[in-house]
Length: 407
Ligand SMILES: Cc1cc2nc3c(=O)[nH]c(=O)nc-3n(C[C@H](O)[C@H](O)[C@H](O)COP(=O)(O)OP(=O)(O)OC[C@H]3O[C@@H](n4cnc5c(N)ncnc54)[C@H](O)[C@@H]3O)c2cc1C
Image 1 (cartoon, rainbow, N blue to C red):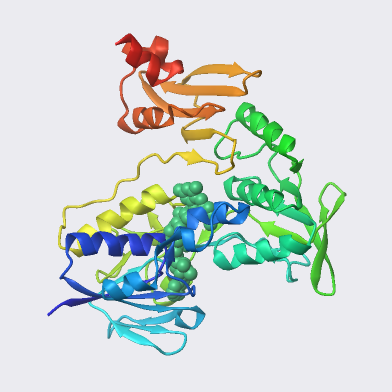
Image 2: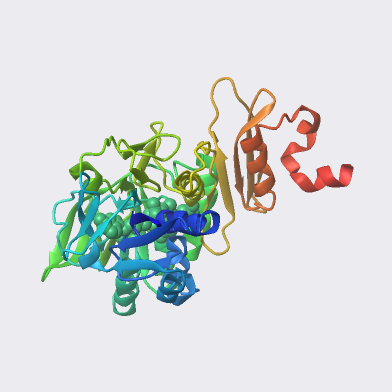
């Protein structure tokens, strides 16, 4: 008889684990998935092109409802199917509407939630995060009739939202507490290139400040007041100041949690029957916000669930890209460098190209590429593989192609 696997969270990590499991051990489990969104499994990353109009919701589906039928995976989805409790003694999952499912193994993959800052006046219509299909549909609908969009947060998602709403015809302002954009991915020089390019497209920036109050008319946002004393008209405010692991359920059922659900190298939680993957987990003190490590977790978890106990998760460097057409940007690793690092740089203002390579001894530990990212995969491998570069140091700045020609 097959074992029962229940998955909480029909998102990228949970369903990637199911995919891997179906490939490695197709006959081992009867699988039931609970998802709080009323959709099949979709590529969340691609919400950005949906927002700027290059893709539709149908385009970004990874598994539509037919897939679940064909693969005999039971899907319970929609807000009333959100799991609200787990009876760990009887190994039973309970959804909002009372639907129950028993498990031998449980996988929690509840992702994360946008960090909604507690700004006075926040609880009005038009203040939203950028996380799911519902958020994007609201943004697209409002952009059709409203004029002023304000984005709080100059990180990757904030800038992608800003560009998307600009493409939809809105006047867009970005507010960022730090005085340079993408301050977790770029140094000041690269950020200055980026800001100039986005400003040329029409995005307005207010850096080194934040929103201290939200004003409204008839329960709908009308303006934001900034801490520097100025005010901006606002028909929509996108809060893009970070994410927090969605661990309320895991906490309620008594799993060990710190900032995320604590898992070991095999993606197992403090309950040996319960695994966890994705942005809700904390592994060796680290949290996750990009899809590459999350997919690696899914692979390890699927191997564990299929009985390959030697498979272990190791955190690797993940690269950053920005999905804004016409902007080529790449960053990986320790791009600022420490006192024991050496920095190689190339700046061409005319071509809008900036390259920075951070070396510790013989090893590349960080890279920023702006304006020309054609060698990004090569640099990423140098960082990941800790490749000794002494023999190619004189040509390192020029990427892989001159090396290939020289050989
Ligand atoms: C707009 C956008 C752009 C992005 N771009 C990139 C990018 O370019 N590159 C990159 O690497 N990463 C990107 N990311 C991040 C990437 O999407 C995430 O790392 C990935 O989705 C994490 O997968 P997850 O399964 O942990 O969470 P999710 O994909 O969020 O899935 C979690 C699911 O669990 C459901 N859920 C939560 N609680 C319950 C419950 N109690 N019961 C049932 N279901 C529940 C949620 O509704 C959700 O559907 C982007 C994210 C966004 C929002």
